[in-house]
Image (cartoon, rainbow, N blue to C red; front, side):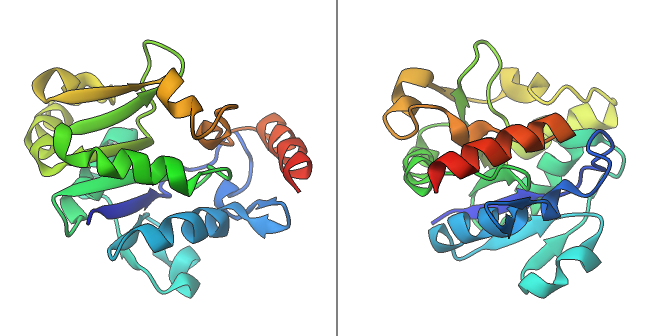
Length: 197
């Protein structure tokens, strides 16, 4: 069993409103995410600096151990807070997560310190990946040096990259990796949601 962390620490500046609660297919995107990942773990939690927003979901919440360290700080907190040795990390604004694909990544957890899909090489999908506790020290070293590039620590751990062809077996259009940062993204997501229903 592994833990699952939903990162909800972003400020949604480009969106202009809290993207976690924007509706997709008639449901807030955060609820779509939680409903997808909930059955996959016995340790589901939200990494957020605004816990009051998520109290209604009755989940454990953690705030950043190292504040103001961007996504890398949120990732460190998620790995640190996980009750299991491995944690699947997803973002709160990914409305089309696919449980079968996530199970595939989870099943590979023991094969490396990081299990990361690569849809658009060479950039891995860091907010749709599995991490082990072995990542903590390399990440912390970079946080303390204010080196916040999220994949910077990959050179110090064992990484298994999952190629697009393997992902396509579960998600041929790669919709699971779509997130929402701008109003234009939200419009695109609504269009995709309408096509799915």
